[in-house]
Length: 186
Image 1 (cartoon, one colour):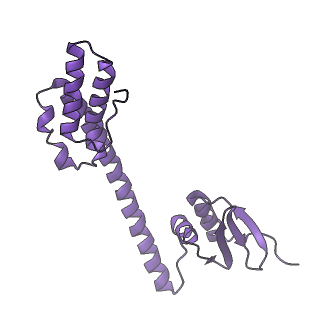
Image 2 (cartoon, helix red, strand yellow; image 1 turned 45 degrees about the vertical axis):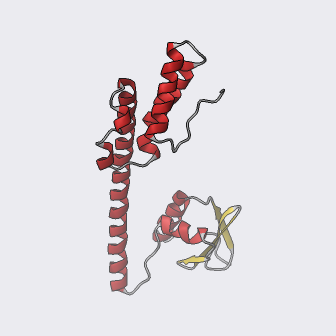
Image 3 (cartoon, one colour; image 1 turned 135 degrees about the vertical axis):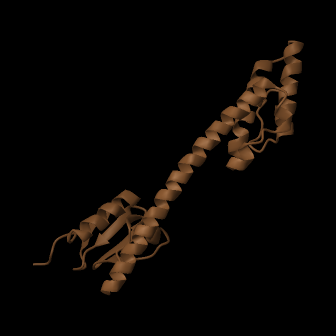
């Protein structure tokens, strides 16, 4: 046995069995028991994250870990990592909801004015990623392996942008400021 790694979908019984095997090998000084123990403890720590546990699920430590302080400590560390991830995800989701609400309010306002709303940078990039030709204020944009090609309202190749959300945000900002990409015909 040279590889003591546990799969990412290891269950509490798999982890407890690996932990018990490491303890047995430690007691009889057989083989690399420290590596076996380390892998079992890492698996116990990763368990809450690997199974994307919710806050309610994190409240209950697996019964197979409760009588071993080392497994309990590893589990608790994994719980803290998962809780931090959940908190970060909640902040991101709240920001996305706020951005969507703001975009919806802007769209409603522009619809009230009778104009088509300008896409956000993320919306623009997602439209380009599905292979659509997108037109914004007379500028046509298309994505290929080199980046985002911009053709100005006069039909001239005007710019090659990186295919990132940030580049799309900058493009939209410039268009809102009245920038026309490329040269105007003489």
